Length: 182
Image: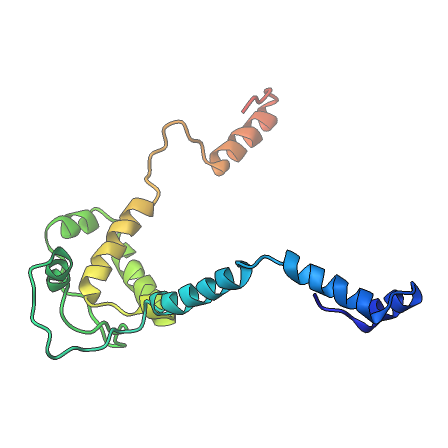
């Protein structure tokens, strides 16, 4: 129990003797949870043990004496692309498109591929952090094109009337004196 000067003054004002105060402090120490210190010690040890797990971006130490094993995690790691991720070079040009990607892009309006290439370059030039580095920029560009194709609105006008069409219909109705219900 921590006694403040104010608490001690109050006890003296109430007429408690030094022996009374000592008994109060001793009684409170007995009431304290004896396992609290042990719990706190274990908690600190757990935090120290988990510190290494928090920093997942740091490379593990290199063990030159390690012999490869056939564990699933190491087999999966061996399938990962080799090399170092890099930022998009300023002079980067995509490889010619082939297959499914070429067929998809050929259906796009004129100029859309150039627009997407420009957006791709600007996006990755402005990006920061570890996600701004890629192992394969051509694969990243093909994914960008697929996403652009998915996000591009289609010229499907079924059940949709543009606001321009609605305004012109309204103006025509007003001019002709016809009630417009839109």
